[in-house]
Picture 1 (cartoon, helix red, strand yellow):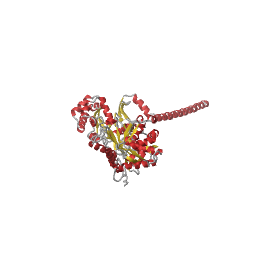
Picture 2 (cartoon, one colour):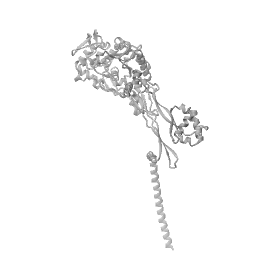
Picture 3 (cartoon, one colour):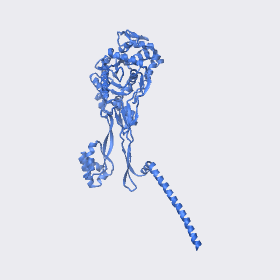
Picture 4 (spheres, helix red, strand yellow):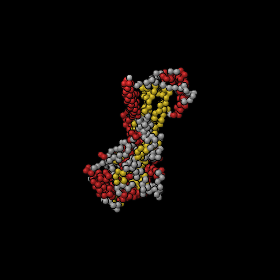
Length: 602
């Protein structure tokens, strides 16, 4: 008997041991499974959610992101995305219950001011649908009363109405800076900052999934949106308005055949403060036929083919300041003199005799003053804009030095401004081995080669700021949807073009241009102003057509603003009347200095 009991005890102990081991194993297994499930829940949630959703019948709708704003340097809105609402109805749910239908229809008729008969016809036509857009792009004020009623006790039976958010690009100033800003088409930026910074301004759409869950109940899942970043431009909205207003007044009084443009820059950073063209359009309606009336009659617009109209709009949207090249004329003369000073070929004490022309390679090339300036100084060669003296300087330098400094000043190269469509002028300059004597002579005073406004103005800034060539740019920084800065565009010095000594000499020569030379109309009370006029004869020379221009800066001692005005074929006055360009530049310069609170110097 004792042996039997002993055996039973031994078996019992063995079983207990096994049970303990099993229990421990099960506990460990439970911990492992729990840990694995927790891992999956945390790290694989999105992945498995997509798998589950993909295996079920569901509807999905896009939740649109908000495109980032574009502001001026001081935070003024230039482009924004306005939140609007689509009224979405669920006809099947509305029609299933007579009381719901009655009260829902009554609410829609009252608060959206719609016809009851047309609404009921809409519901009947889409009776089997759970999703139909009934009204598009309503403002919050248009739907707020209906929303409030639906959330009230009286509106508890109103059902089957949703308000889906949508965004519409808005430009509060409509035409202001149109070529600079660009617009949005099919959610993509088209031209200007909208195109150049499209990836920054764009966000990621969210999505709402509606589906039947395992209990056959309607359920939903939401993937949140990511809004686009905003762009803070270098533009000063006040200076942009100043430039555009001056252009409008000029076009109304005189007009130009191929447009006029104004560029305003900070010479000490490469920042563009304003970029204005006379041909404007409404950014909120860029494909309106009326936008083409600047150049075409209504009958011409009506008879245009689709291709011709597309070309006309493309021309209108083009920013001439960066995309158009032309012979700069006498505004290039300071660069020719700068090359001579830098190489020691000139020292500032030279004098030249102008008899009204030079004969080069059998070609008679005239000075702007056909009767000749007589004996003039190096300073006067600029202030009086003497072609004869410049041809003599070009000959002294020779083609190798001349073309070397064209390259140093970045002519024929891209500035790489942060805008699309910059013109490439590399094939529009003479290389040293291709430059004949006549090419050197005409190039010395800004003819027989091409540049763009942004090329010349950027290089000119280096001449007046002490020699630093800054990369031009139109954006200062970007910010996320919370307003935090995500990227800062710092001024970038690309190269040193001239010495401070050369810069100081050229500034004094161009001050003389305004004090007693061809730019006298640029004088501004309280400020010292320098600048250079330009009159470029267009090809074919026999046509007698001209581009007139003026580039000016102030204060001379420490330039804060550079203004460049170009007019392509003046109307209602002589095409060689550079005084018109000088006056416009003066007015823009004066008001810009005041806007920036630049202290008067005299």
